[in-house]
Amino acid sequence: MVGIDIDLAVFATEGCIQAAERFDDCGYLPLPGLLTTSGLQRLRADVAGLAPLTQRRDFVMECMGGTPRNMTTLGGEVITQRAPGVSNLYQSTELMGALGTLLGKQIVVADDPVERHVLNILHKAGDTHGYHVDDYPIALVMFIDSPTCPEGCGRLEFCPATDDGRGPEGHPPYTRSHEAGDAYVLRSDRLNHRVQPIHDGCLRTVLNFAYGFAGEEIDRTPSASILYS
Ligand SMILES: O=C(O)CCC(=O)C(=O)O
Ligand SMILES: [Fe+2]
Image (cartoon, rainbow, N blue to C red):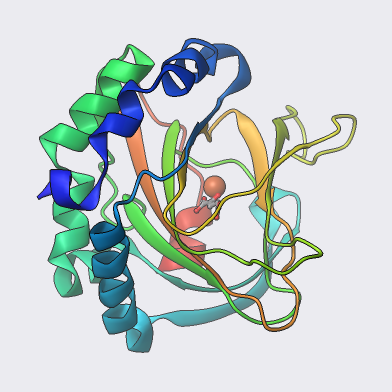
């Protein structure tokens, strides 16, 4: 049940409502403490159960400006089969309703079963999810693990996407840190975003829930099937 996994009150805090009002302009909405203690525990158990099914990826994504992917991933179809609790959370009317209300627009589940919810694990020194844009406009990213090393690593960086190579050139990126149990929402089809490389001994695990806007078409790239199939 969503109320057990997700603290819906986070959506009603003043900071959250103010950030949502700026979402159209800035495209980033922090949701600190979105996962309850029991929700984090449950998702951690789900992720542990999924771990043997994950795949190591080390390549450059040609269709995203040749940016690196050094990470371990699992796509949505396997997650649906092997961790139905994650899928149930993804499509729960409480979560989607709260998010849609906050953003002032009805959100819909992603029609691509691979991309709708994915698991991204950075666990080796230098692991990074390089700059890209997503196909779907809304990414709700929830942190199962986040590095706590004093130098800081594995932070989210984002900046406006350019028309050409989708590279960060010309735009100094914004950088945001998150802790386990936190989440954020990103306008992920418009903002060029990446995860900074992590340091040795650090671990960063996220679930990314992708949503569309009702009645809006998606501009598809092959990137999700390359990274998650
Ligand atoms: O791990 C993150 O914070 C970003 C995830 C992401 O960009 C993606 O899964 O497309
Ligand atoms: Fe992304």
